[in-house]
Length: 387
Image (cartoon, rainbow, N blue to C red; front, side, top):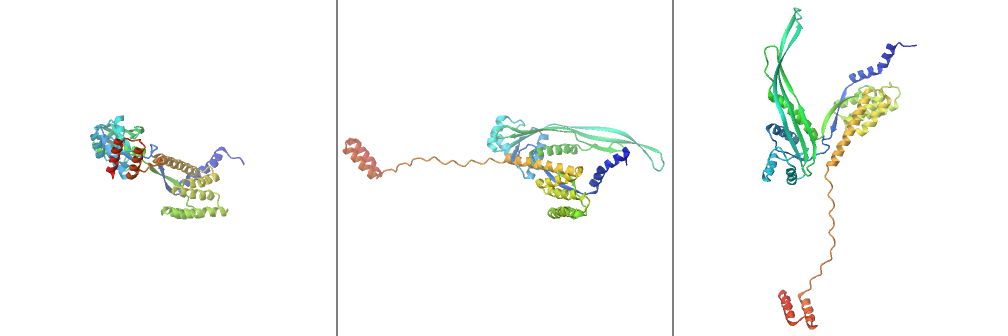
């Protein structure tokens, strides 16, 4: 039987259509993925350079508060840094010279210096109007209303540099650009402008988030499909997941996979799902290396399943990030101190002869004529003093 072209296209589209409904019909599981610091280096201790203006100081203060709260890095107290700068006459301007950096490195020990400069933070206020037309459902008459809008905007630009105090090398630098705005609208006269402080807060929060991702590991949540079919205990495993019992969900998923290998009387779609669900639980536990072969097995059994394709890619990405984080940890670990070298062996100093023995040798030298009487008497007097 020959199919018309439209009918053939419908049949070809059925698997994609089924996958679309699978994504909608099945629940989602949240998995956390951790990224390494953007610098590619874990910094244990840092100090903020003196800020040249109030805006830069505000951003540096906000960063300091979050870094201290994270507990992942030690921040040198600003008062201590200012005291060091003043005592050493290094200046307190926003510009830090290379010679100053070298001196700070010796005074503060192994640290990074964060230099924050807000170059531009310009507020502006604008207004706009717009006619909006609608139909009154009672009178069926057209209604025209004028919407007035007051807008507060900010043109924000900043730079951040992270410098190794021990070498003066720039670890990394980032330029932060943002143009946030807030809007108030009204159909009855002009509304008040949104507060300047609220718009500034938006820009500073965005800038702060970008800088923290340079300095610290950070996590994000991904949502992946989990199948809750009644076959092979998938629904019970999902109930355990919802209750936050990953261990219980893992046990049920492992049992379900074993059942799927023994029971070949179910619909074909359930067998790759048993592998996939177990892989997702391993993924949620952060066991990416264990999850990867399970997700690959699911995809091998159903290569056209976009759900399986997406999950496998997410797991591969998470594994790559985990490896990157390990490399960061390895690079940041302090080098092992070399074992102290044994002191070179030295010849033992000869024991000093007693005064009696020295007197005896002195007399022998005198009798042999090797010392005159004056020398003999002088040496003898020295030895007798010791007695």
